[in-house]
Length: 277
Ligand SMILES: CCCCCCCCC/C=C/C(=O)SCCNC(=O)CCNC(=O)[C@H](O)C(C)(C)COP(=O)(O)OP(=O)(O)OC[C@H]1O[C@@H](n2cnc3c(N)ncnc32)[C@H](O)[C@@H]1OP(=O)(O)O
Ligand SMILES: NC(=O)C1=CN([C@@H]2O[C@H](COP(=O)(O)OP(=O)(O)OC[C@H]3O[C@@H](n4cnc5c(N)ncnc54)[C@H](OP(=O)(O)O)[C@@H]3O)[C@@H](O)[C@H]2O)C=CC1
Image (cartoon, rainbow, N blue to C red):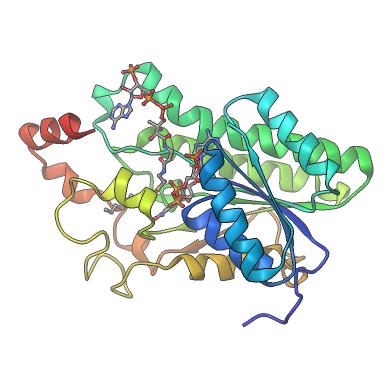
């Protein structure tokens, strides 16, 4: 679909790059010539993904353990990444979610999600932006958000608040940093049944993760479809797109937010879910 070598010479840092959508983007970017920095909390997972992608594509892949909830860890990540050459693009992909009734959430539960999905994304964006501005280099930031930033969504409120906050950051910095040649864009995926999605969102739900009728195209999305859109948004072809969130959801958010079935759930069903976690 894309010209060979489209991303040659680019160095791209992907948070949560060891699994799911992050790994799918990593594989696509590396296949198009980019060198990569992958981060996440689990070193073994990162190493395996990094080695697999390097062997398949010949790309340079640096796998660096980092918990993006910790600003000192984030600074160390960016220092280590830059030591291997300046980073051209950041992908804020790491995120956290669980499905629960909001009145049952402790403040620690709220903080656990915001710390990664909101604060972590902001720490990484500032770490990248500061370095680009100090070096007079251009850069781009792609954040993986959610259609819930448009519709709102019950039972996943900490995640929705986080994604909406990162969308606000994207639009705001797109204006503030445009003169520094830093571009910020986002993708709002619908349902893409990764292992993380199946464990955190689909577990305990009736039926398929995306049932016929949930979206206009009657199928879930695929990681390679997200990787294609991410490639376009980070490529020179998208140089005139700034501050925008592109939806990739088969039209689902035009019909529902994804959790309407849960409005009818009984107390007993919620208790069963809580017991399973
Ligand atoms: C189908 C179509 C749909 C379609 C609609 C839905 C579309 C969804 C789109 C998005 C999909 C995705 O994001 S898929 C990506 C999923 N991947 C991830 O989430 C990976 C990262 N996740 C995580 O690390 C964990 O899940 C997370 C809990 C957030 C953080 O882990 P920690 O180890 O930091 O946290 P813990 O110490 O375990 O817990 C911290 C506090 O949170 C509370 N807590 C933890 N899990 C909880 C839960 N399930 N319900 C309530 N509270 C919970 C604990 O009790 C603690 O509070 P106290 O008891 O008070 O101490
Ligand atoms: N799949 C879907 O349908 C949708 C996904 N999304 C978003 O896409 C992104 C990727 O999700 P997906 O691939 O499905 O699920 P995954 O669970 O595979 O992705 C989450 C990744 O983030 C990493 N991560 C989590 N917390 C931290 C942390 N504190 N510091 C560093 N890394 C962390 C995880 O690695 P580790 O545990 O090793 O740290 C993991 O690699 C998320 O932001 C998600 O919200 C949005 C809408 C729909």
